[in-house]
Figure: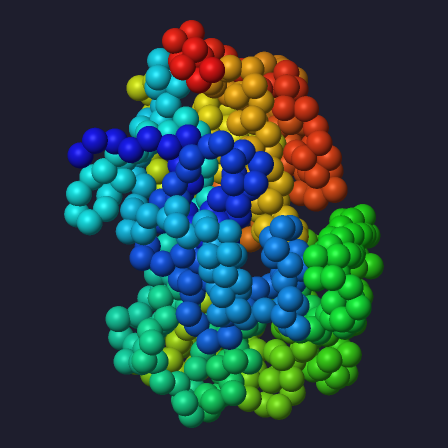
Length: 493
């Protein structure tokens, strides 16, 4: 079958891919594009995860798109509401008509002579090829194949059900049963209070505690503004309010970690009372924002603990038994269902093999440019959100920058944009400064970041806004080359 050509190929039809489609239509309307989605439905994370209580740990006024207001009452939204928002956005702007489902991208090869990528796709049992001038990876940062589950001793001996949240079975019945949720991250603190509504008892088993913060599910200021102002105006005000509050909190946490830690733990004590062992179960060994904080709407986790429908155990697993778990302290936990909320498997470049002029790209040997492009890899960007704020804030800025880059290339007649490391003073640093286990397990396979702009990841929305939306695309590190042949220019004219 002959290749189809598009100006831009977007990989992934989740929240990032749909956003990329909008920005291309809005800022670069002369560009053709296709969205290649490996699964049979859109929505990415919000379609894949089906576990009880699935929700965002970011408010929807910042996780939502900059161009389409979130108008529901709840700021901390559940998975189905977010999925509906993504689907409605795609339908409203006609982005859904550009999606090819069941199209798993496996390989992309760049040819400087042709100024084009050849993208190899598995679809319907055969291999299809697409060509494009720009490749935009919007498939997120983790593998959709399976989540991370440690190989504990004795797992085969256990007679109950072992479930990972990434592959939640539709017919799992835990009503009245004993449940153990292994983990202490965002997924675990979501699952525990939700499962505790109908389970006999739910135990959250953690090796070490995480910072847990309660926040109202509804933003009263946002709801009031929406009742008084046009939706987009109210949304914009609330979005900036939440962005600035988060930036201030993050800055204070980094500047005064001990004071921030004291305040966070004091808030937990206010919820659980003076007799609860906060020191053991809710006091991490690391500073705030060394890992992402866990958000619980309306204190649902704390309410569950106070009601006695759930509990927390801080210990290490020695082995699985036929009836549950034996811990290193000697304690045994009986369980009918064990949920391994133990994290994700990170994936570099959406799992694609990248080849540039016949040479396979080794991700760990590249350096990230402005958090979205990569040294010596032409005409390719990836959409990757913030670790200290909402994912979509950075993705929106990334999309706007990509359209600016495309428009600059069109104006100048140059077909290739390649980040080049020409400054010898730039030192290599880890791609993410995050101590979370899911990051540390695979960080060595990821690109590096640099010690200064434009190779530095600042994790700062206001700074990125100025650089990506208003800053020059010709900054000395981005090399524009490969002019269009004169025959092509005449044809275009």
